[in-house]
Image (tube, rainbow, N blue to C red; front, side):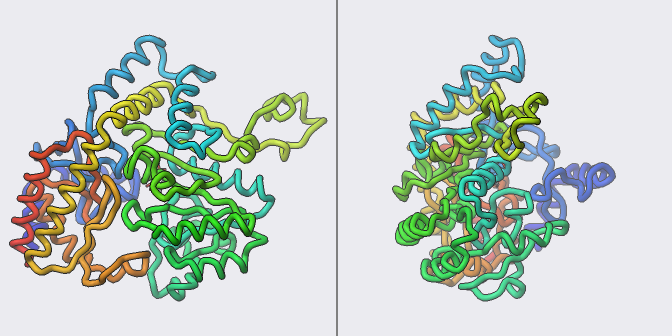
Length: 454
Ligand code: PLP
């Protein structure tokens, strides 16, 4: 393919580094998601909306670290906030409570009123893990339900039916659980129930059948950040979980700040029992937040009698009195400073990000339609995906599997060669640093690439 050939001509040093890294890390990557075939591009610098690789190529960055960099690379307000925090405190880490934990928490509560109490974690993965543990503890039940195609992190309970081969995954309306990885304990294929997204009747039937075992339903309100739940599906899901005594967890790790400051719950006007945030909420630094109803969250409150490390109490109480949640780096001061700075900038500039995203989405859709190629630019707010398909609507994982990924991959390599960066087949995210100039340069690159392809 021309795209791939041009990509390889431009990136010889990335290939060289990749080959050397194969001797250090399995697959030459520290996270499976960072790999793509034939080899990933190794980056050296980032500035605003731009990334620079080790061959000196410049890219407009639309991967933005899988959506985390909502203000772009090296935003001066984030750098300043982190710097001030380090300078003034003279340390990176207190290992004790500090002011920013409360200040950031108050801000998050203001934007997400459903999060009456919250806890910090180091990643989105840890945030959903805590939410699920809280749900088990609160309900006393031992199963969860998730939707086919939804991702909630890299541990066994939720690493089921994220991207299953359709021929192994049962019928569309009653999907079978499929473990997503070697090494996932088969226990979880029995204890994680799989639901069909945007199909209220089938979801009802499955929940009803498992009602007495289900602690929670966890959902990405916008699947993968780009396939939105319909309003009626969300309304129905809220109602049925409430009636059946099953907790509703909104995993907003990807959606937070991407469809408005109040996330998907403000957009859909639904109050979940628990919420998880991540990615954009740290402006690019590692963070997750779990929060929700006070009566549920308070289960994790430490008390004198529940001090897990107090050996003197072991004769009087049981470890089961405690919902364990801990982490050396939870509430890291530099990261909370970055998070607060991110929110302050977004309060002024979120409209710009949404505006740039709307322009780019409309421009791309127009270019495809001028060439008569069936496609959808899917997504709400500042994160979207380009799905090449003749289908009129895409509402779940099964619809997505019918898209033309080969053509999209070809397009992606042509765009990479023209300096437009997202990982092949991945989403597009927009940051505060993307302006008119970047949007028009991107549309020109799309026009050129589509001219070569169709
Ligand atoms: N939940 C959702 C919806 C996500 O998109 C992700 C990451 O992509 C996670 C959880 C896991 O977050 P992290 O990669 O920070 O562990």
